[in-house]
Image (cartoon, rainbow, N blue to C red; front, side, top):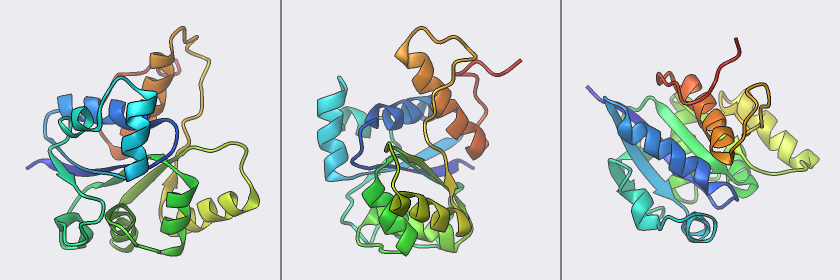
Length: 186
């Protein structure tokens, strides 16, 4: 039986992180991905990467329109191993923190919290204000995991791809997906 993982890509700089996560999951055996992208994410994919939104959709097993509140992933009865929002904008974080499920990405995240499934938010903003920090606290207290893509230098990276793989590898570790895409501390 395939491990079902929801991947949300929201409208924050760093969409390449979501693309890379989908690439790795696409190559992993026994993983079924369920993708939701916001309209802003689609625009940023075209702006920040060499991919189109269509290219990214091809990496997923299932793709959903963000306005489709009747999608299977909007229900707690649709069992998954969890969800990753990568990158997670502060707007998306705020919606998740207060339970404002106004679109499918926010509803799927809300379902993960209410069903006590893993919810990983790869938040992308700096510097943080107190509202951002408070929203992160609320999500954490509700069972979510805040996993910003923090740079690591112990592995002496020489290319941006190594830094991307480090962040994505940490997400995969939390999901329980075996990987060797980044150099671990020895």
